[in-house]
Image (cartoon, rainbow, N blue to C red; front, side):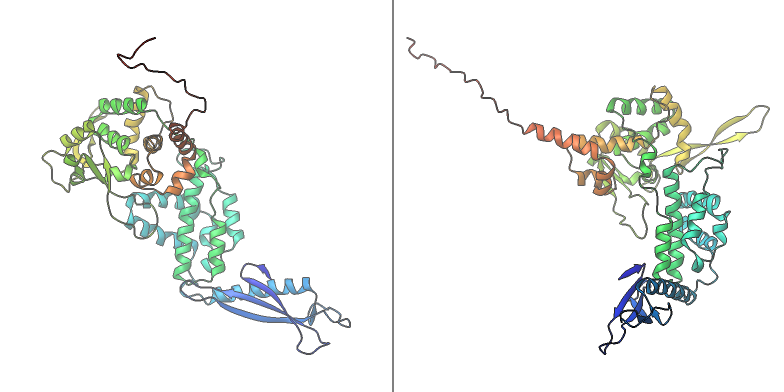
Length: 425
């Protein structure tokens, strides 16, 4: 019988009739890359004989045996952790630093974001000093209770937004799990990490999905173009393809294929481990092809397709900025000033975020009756994510398709035709 994680309590009958059976505790020990092994321990006799009296040591009741099995399992857990390789002196802070360095090598901007979150919310907390092999659920629970927003001029008594908390917990879980794997720690530590960093149930509900009608999307593109042609080209690509900012920023001149009227989007850098590097063919309307063809004209294929001016401050009695050089878009924060002005000029609601262009593109495809798998593929996501986040629009789109196949049940009026030249009587 399973009485605790990795811990079972069993009963072994006596081999000789008339004697007491034996309580047996068993613990599963699982390490990454190895087969599960089991340890057993006899806990004393069971009180299954009429003349036996349970004393809690030599003879135990069922409940006494359960308590003894749990205590033995905890002792074995501590012993297993002590034998883990290379993890005795590693703290939570060490695990975070190793993870951040690896994340920066994989994706600099994403690594910096993770570094800020983990440094601000974990490294300065008591949790950072806890040894990895001594980490408990209590440590993680106590740390989560103390999480407050704070930083960047915000009040420090406001809880973290669910979406922010989810990103923080995902980063921390990745850091701790990687450290536990390197130490070849037993499975109970992995369980503690997984349960202690479980994200909120529905972080996506923190912000209502923003889906714009096509007319509003066009108006946004026009106001962005009027504000700054470089910014307008970026917004045009985001609106037309539904790409994430990072995908659009990594487009090269060679990725534009005007003759085929498409652009080859690089995949996102989301997820862990190696990811396919195949680019995603996204068709473009003729006006967008012409707009991007002008950007690519006369430039080498390896150059970034979307670029902007970088400015520098000029000394003087008044603050003045002048153009310095042209660089690729690298951080989504660089587009926020232009975005705010474009939203205001288009007379759209405040609080609209650039990700609304991606939402709108996905919903546009669903409403057009495209297969969910195709919509997911062209937007570099999964069908499960489409189902989870865009279920309402899927229902609306499929209902529209079904209505096209409906047949009225009322009898149709019959119109009799007369042949030309027929006798009329």
